[in-house]
Length: 423
Image (cartoon, rainbow, N blue to C red; front, side, top):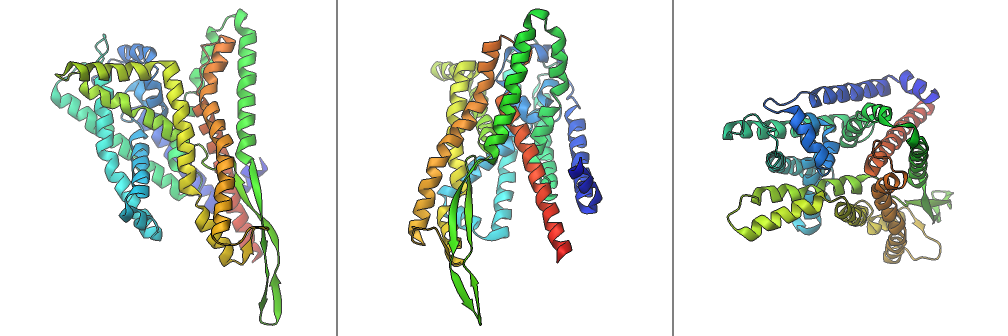
């Protein structure tokens, strides 16, 4: 409460928080506007039978359940970001562009926006094609014009979410995309609580165990979020004029979960891509192509196989994203420029090698942590026998991670203002 009072007393911070809340309200309002020509009863019945589309709903804030303007959510933008980041590591021109400061960052962001449009159209068509496979008639009109209008509308919804996310990020009160996903997840909380009404007295022990497991999961996420290895750094004394300065000792914090919740968001986005593409080939003339497409869709609809692929993707993306955001050579160079060194390690390349080796040891437990968090809810549900209270480990991690990130950014801004007041 004291933190909230301090936020309210700082006009710039208060206005930023109110702006973000306003954007989230607009997001939830638009997510509730359904597209015309869809049978909601038939749609709900189909979604209950297809757990794969629950991942799409995660990024759309429940927009898919209503088949709203935001039916495909922000997933195409995230997929575009992954592709551009991969190309940045492969294509020399993009790599040089990424090192040109704000100008290069702006150009890469622009390329990501351009790529989002075709990806949103592809995913929109894939979702429509998947829904048309239902035995029930979900769409009242299936002519080419109606389908084209729905695809264009869903693409516009994705671009709208992307724009909202960028507006929120500019206020420096959390990451905009993460906050939109957070709002979509939290919006499902009332439905989760209402499911308690369907639980009979024989499941009370299971519900208590389920709740305890959820609380322990949240506590574990918070604990690992702050876990770090401190690498000692010592700064040599320097003569400046007639004075001797420096000689301080500090540390370089290397977080166990350096990548945060981004690998899970990436993994969820990528795991939707193969079945979406497979939808395009269900009506192919070649028999083996049709069989291959059906196999891909069945494979990713299976909870066990889906969980295994999800686990592997989270591990891989943790290593990938950590390699992007943590560059040992640059860190070693900055330490050397400031006259610092790691005790027992020579400055320059030896320091970069030491940091790379240390980070490689830390990434493994961090990757395992994320992968286990992402898949543990299925184990808990199987152990307690409670299926009414379903939750996603990815959802819990995103919610907790976003709350921690918001408070850290707000605290950093408040600390900066305190220093400004002192100066």
